[in-house]
Image 1 (cartoon, rainbow, N blue to C red):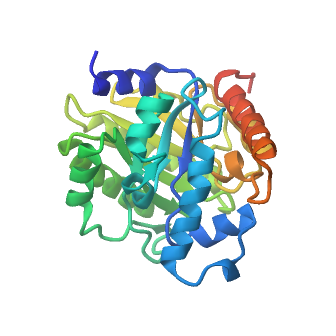
Image 2 (image 1 turned 45 degrees about the vertical axis):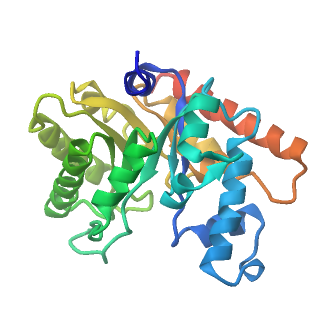
Image 3 (image 1 turned 60 degrees about the vertical axis):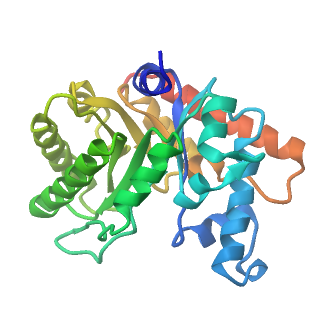
Length: 301
């Protein structure tokens, strides 16, 4: 079995979850703040990205950060292009840790219109995909945001997600389509039902041989996305934490039998730069164990 086939098997059938380490320019200062690095600690974007890369390397080299419980890791482009222990990051993840590498490719969001935020244009998408493929990356992630239960707005989000996904598929990578319903949406449950229906229509229209992964907000109605997860064009449905605490995110995840985690802050939010290596490794190990359990050990709704 070649690497690509083994990665697909791990992603589609493995027991575990995805780690989201893809904070980009807009969210990096907040991520560093939570890690205990104040904005006064850096004076340029270059210094900021160096510090966030050091944080990510510390996470990726921790003893618990392995394929035993983590199936995939979503990277920021700068992390993908960087190195861990002198090895290209995607190679380190797959060869040294047994974790399937993905990369975030969107360039942020447009202003809200019709209750949603679609993605900004991605003029560098083609070269980024080519570079990712050459580095051994398996797939991509691109995020849109849904604020309200707007049928037309949600349709626009889903249409754009599948259009970008098609470009990714043609480049030989597997797309994660992320349509995030914000957890403070005033009509979150209604928006999620509209999103489910729009996703099913998009999946039905995919040609044979096209596979996608979906990254979705933990829904108000447990198992809302069961039919989506069962679709033969879907390799996996992963859940974003979206601002829920680790306790709340894990509790909701346990009630969704067809979803595994793809958490960011709910996974690494307890880590601090001032921790000793032993404290850091213990805190990350405990978080990984909790998120893994919520991904594979389900409860009744």
